Length: 261
Ligand SMILES: C[S@@+](CC[C@H](N)C(=O)[O-])C[C@H]1O[C@@H](n2cnc3c(N)ncnc32)[C@H](O)[C@@H]1O
Image (cartoon, rainbow, N blue to C red):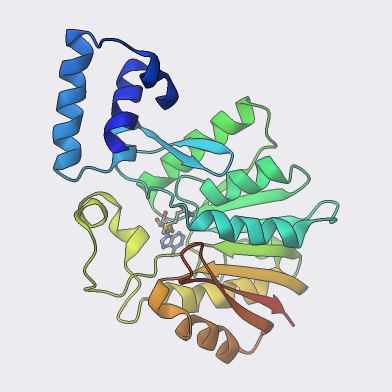
């Protein structure tokens, strides 16, 4: 699969077109071979093609930004189900990275007013780049804000007015073993979440409780080992009810949702 996608990227054709090709020129073959070597050295496929598919979008990615994962598509699906029927919902994505969540929500629910918050100065360049590309393609503008999701002063003007806070925060416990593609190529700020992986989440909950209106919804992605721990932390915070956990398509615990009391 990776080989086919790399060859398709070298030739600038969709993967299915490879079936119809009789031959590959020497230049393209040499470029393909170089990419295969890099992939064999565990450079992520998406860094080599420069693109990452996510729901209905294809986002630009590369060194400095977290590669969006298919698991996160379901969190967006849950978010869209909750927005259905609301006229101009206010949405905040905390830790936007490539903009996968924020830009998908704006694309699939154009009535939403979406703000994307990102702290990493390298990553936010990708958020801005992708947001500008989607706006140029006709999607509603997404506001991209440089900020820390645990900052008590973040987005104060939205206090108590937000309909949906959604986040795929850094949640990998410090010291956990991760594949080389992740350890060597995803930015550290996108991964590590303290001893139990939930340090950033604890700060995020304080921000979400402040921003959300009563009845507003919260959705947070987590690691497969955090299917009990994250709901427990959300319950313990005290500002949320209807706390539930949801599996991904592989059946592993993947995201926690809750409602602002
Ligand atoms: C796991 S990545 C998710 C990126 C994107 N939302 C996605 O789903 O592909 C987490 C993102 O949160 C950002 N981040 C980490 N700590 C943050 C903080 N305290 N405030 C804002 N953003 C933060 C990281 O830089 C990274 O881009």
